[in-house]
Image (cartoon, rainbow, N blue to C red; front, side, top):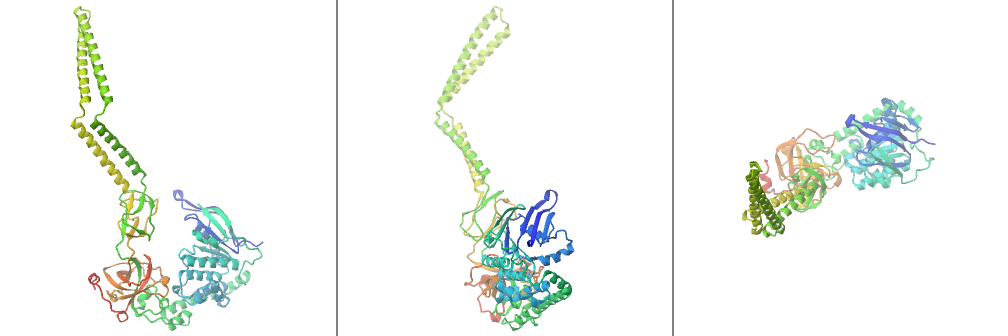
Length: 636
């Protein structure tokens, strides 16, 4: 029976030490079979990428075993692991990792050259046709869409002999249409080539393409279900017609030649782009293509705008710069006036909002409890005031009357005791001290009776004006405290200050915010009008003027051009904030911000969408009238 391309036995992996220790994997067992696409899914932090790195021997496990084709490889020294990876593993990355100076065909051929030893032995056209890219074979990566670049990476994987194909989030940077094509190509790679394809993703929409779905949760396999039956074991597992022993022997003989040819091929491609000539496919297209020369070639090249990557019919320009789409109106940051935990964010980025509409809810349980308590206090004070004004107190009158009767009875008893004690004292039977006590008790009883009569009179006469005013003041105080509590509760609901759209959503439910936090919860504004904000290098600022015509392009629009004109030049130089992620980009350049007004026929553009703008020469730009406001805002 043929051994699986890869097998994990009891894999555990821990990062950090002490209190910061995190267990990424906990005793994972997994057999990866040929001829099927295995989808490893799970939430962020579940251990998916760590598992993929251990399968590829890019990381070592703390415990457990890793097997390739029936051979244990986790005990091999580091010096032997690269050879094992070349023989068994093909990696497909989220960021494509294509050589920008080589065409799609040359990128595929280079991978085959390094593994098979001869470019003629690599059927590049066949590999590109399998991913439906044969018509784009002579295009550079800059001329390919994101999905086409990823499919080029899959074609490169076809040229490699490894039975195990590992793809880490291969569709994360793609829209759904391109993601579907990439997943179909990976599924075909597994079933037609009888390879073991493992895709790591958190996107549940990829499940229909999988033969097997492995779910990870907290570093453990929480589920392992099969959507399709695995092919029979008689299907060949190695699509490479060259036997492994022959390939190793041949690789040892020609390894120096292979590496030399690879280096020369890469250098030749770079020289072709730099000098716009040569006999390579890149140089031939640059010399014979229809794209006109651009006067400011060095400036355009600074942002990766090689001549081969420009759409046809681009008019000559004097400078080029990266740009980003932003709202024409100023953004408003939505913050909180009270500290608390975010309970819900009611709007997503791009949704329309109305002034006064709730946007964010903070945890309001304590504030609601305080409101209820203050409302109860108000009800008690209002009831006391009403009772005082109505003076309907039969219980108090009865109590006062009973108090008078008790005081009179006490006085009667005190007077009788005084008479008896005085008689005894006169007969020299009782001491003088007893007589003094009897006299004092009689006086106290008389005073108590007088007090009880006054209280009874008050219950019959009603409240005084002073009592009513004090009760009314207590009611107003309770109302003010209730209004304060209600205001605190209302501040737990953050509403929109304007009619417009949510531009950015910075924080999510569960996060704690306070008024001093530097990060807002949302940024809102109006999306009815957008503009481009470009960052022009300090070497090119003299070529840019207010009113100058501009052409903007982006890979997502293909050959379509977005046009506009410069309406404002920032008077101060600043640091670069727009990053294009190109290898030719300068990282420490000072720039000048340029605002570009787009023409009325511009299609809808998403906020933060990056484009490349070219500032056209005056002789190729139509005459435009600059508004006084625009002209007065620049120092030109």
